[in-house]
Amino acid sequence: MNIRAAAAVFVMLVPSLASGHEIGTTNVRLNSDRAGHWIATITTAPRALLNTLEAEAGEPRTPDVDASTLRRHLEPRLGQIASHLGLRFDGIPCRPLVAIDTLEVPADVTRPSYVALSASCDAATTPSTITWRDDLVYSTYAVVLEHDRRTQTVWVEGDATASLSLQSDAASGARPAIVWQYLRLGFEHILPRGLDHILFVLGMFLLTRSVRPILVQVTSFTLAHSLTLGLTMYGVVSLPSSVVEPLIAISIAYVAIENILMDRIAPWRPVVVFGFGLLHGMGFAGVLRDLHLPRASFVPALVSFNLGVELAQLTVIALAFACTRAVWQRGGQQWYRARVVVPASAAIALTALVWTVERVAGY
Image (cartoon, rainbow, N blue to C red; front, side, top):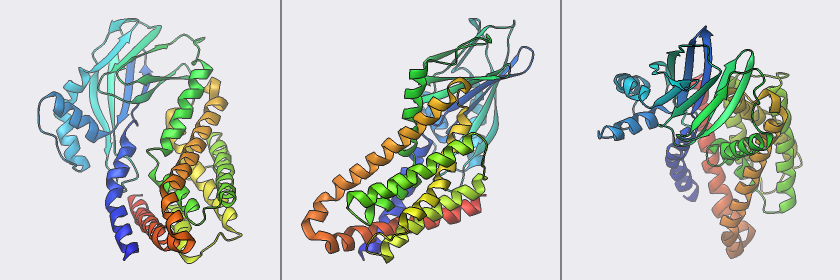
């Protein structure tokens, strides 16, 4: 009964938890496809965008709908979106023309919905600087300038203004700022956005409360995903997301099911965790690939992101220890296993198996 109840509650909570994955995923890419013609590609969460525009217009909030309905609601508001964009070339404002390029709402709740908007504009002269502002965004996001065979990335806090230089000798950003930005990005990719990675870490934690076996598993997982994160970012190894994402879900289910079938850490567990960590590293690389790491600070940004991931994982484990401490002290190992380990692992396994089916069907 405990297993069924825990599993049912957890599965019901997954959509609401996973919807947080969309928050803070806005990014902007600026490039020129011909002389004087500039395009800003804005990728953001469509439901959040629509609800913000509706609130501004004093209209009722549209509930969760499918992709075609979202597009139908957003298209009449493209002019309203354009009015919130501040694009300037050498200080001269340019009102962009906004269109919807792509809009997707995946069936898998762990994959974020997104809309890609193109905001095109013609500069009157050959500019030396571009400033960008989007006052519809409330979270930190990346603005990537692709120009003259180089990439420049700046991070913007909400509706602040980003200034980017088109000069060939422009600095790509102060290294301490880049280190902090990617450290935070790595942490936030796990907490609060990485529900699938959180469940994997909890799966490693649940079977034992001894610090050493947990640290052995975490170390094995860390080494593995650090390895493939680096190799994938450097283009040495690569697997399509249609393969990686379902396998990540399977890895979560495996660890959770093993927790149910076994009452202690098996000798092969760190090896299995290492293998699954290789897959998770490829999943982490997908996030960084979309953000175009600054070329001049590639290694510090990569290391900082990975460190942020590790800090988040240790935070998850520390919170798990704190939340289960009273239960463990009350009844001991067998009582703890019957009321925490087995029900929680069953809920995690069931959720991961649902994700596996959704991810396979989604691709």
